[in-house]
Length: 178
Image 1 (cartoon, rainbow, N blue to C red):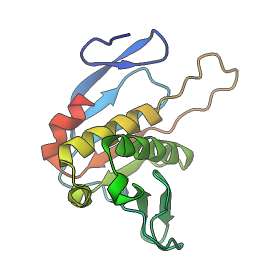
Image 2 (tube, rainbow, N blue to C red):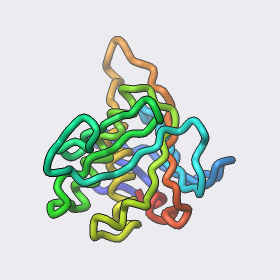
Image 3 (cartoon, rainbow, N blue to C red):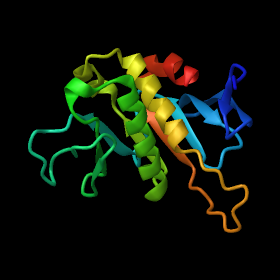
């Protein structure tokens, strides 16, 4: 089925509204009535406690200090609170690749109970696609990957609210479309 403008698919036949709100950190997309609270916020600078997320191409030789080989693989360095999100092979990078990577990142954020993460778009130019297209696909993947359907579960896990900062306010229109 088709969704009304500003709506987000929420399971078969169900729709939840997405609203754009202005907060203290900038303007971002806030989803209501989903099982996982995830805000996407375009700002010039991140919160000091936010994990830094970098997008990277899979290297020819994989080691513990390099990005992973598979799309969406997250390598976390606790010493400096950074994570590298693998996009896979550069020649195979498409918008769908970024959606899949965003979905994997959302699952990693939920699993590790991350409350703040910051994505620097500086590496977006390495992939041969427009930065706003990459941001849109990544945001869409984050939102879809953060969805949980637990209405009929007897034991419901309380989700940890998370904010994902996109460190470029010019990406605001792309995030609003997501």
